[in-house]
Amino acid sequence: MRPRREKRRHFVENMLRLGLHHVWRETHRGEDFGGTIGLRSPIYRLTALWDGNVTPATPGFDPERTPWGEIVRDLEEEFWCYQDNSASFEAAGFARLWPLTEPRIEMDIAAWPWVPEGYSPVRIPDEQVFGCFAYEWGEGDQTAHFHIGNACMPESPFKDMESRREELLGMIRNIADERPRTEFIACNSWLNSLPIFQGLFPPEYPRSDCVSEVGMGYNWWGQFMRRDGGFHDRNGQAFRCNGRFAFASIKGCCAISRLKRHLKA
Image (tube, rainbow, N blue to C red):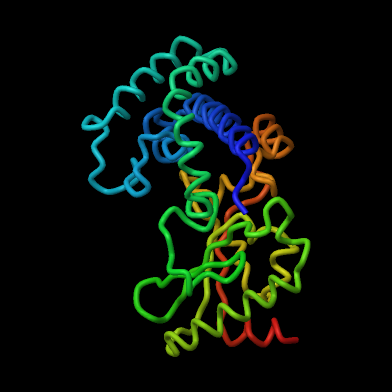
């Protein structure tokens, strides 16, 4: 089920404001403004500038050949005007970006769940989608990488863990049928920090020592979406207060044979 329009609007409005607050805070900490807003915030992919593929993180991306370069310069000027007032910077940044962000709402609803905070922004073949899980291949056949999307919206995917278990079993069976040499399954997500999600996998799956860098990806920023597609106000407020994500995006990886035994146990 797709998110309702009012929920999607609620999410986008608040994500845009939270992203601007993050940029304001990180720039105060000495980080580069342009790098933070383009590479370490979710802002670009909330706008209609995003074509579904190329982002400021894409090798060869030249901001000066797109409107993005001018926008970043304007927003950096606003930062220096309001460097002592986060709320004023957010308001100015929101006014500058919202006309580019609002048109994206209908586009993302129509494309759901093939958006960054669903399974992935690039559509994966239907035969590789199993309920809340979708997989793709890494380099070679050794490892399959999977994504998680809330196919149960507006319900929580964790409401029915037996269904999630069956979906994972179906996915790894399909992986084995398609490429029998595949040995491992892996995912990088904030969900790997949740005990209820970890319970679907054998104990060695969550690699708490493998924390990914914060980027624009929803492996970090996905924790600010509610199960109904709206913005998670509690997580957002905590992030504003302490500058820390409640859940770290960590790597999860295990042998497919071990996962199969675990799911059948």
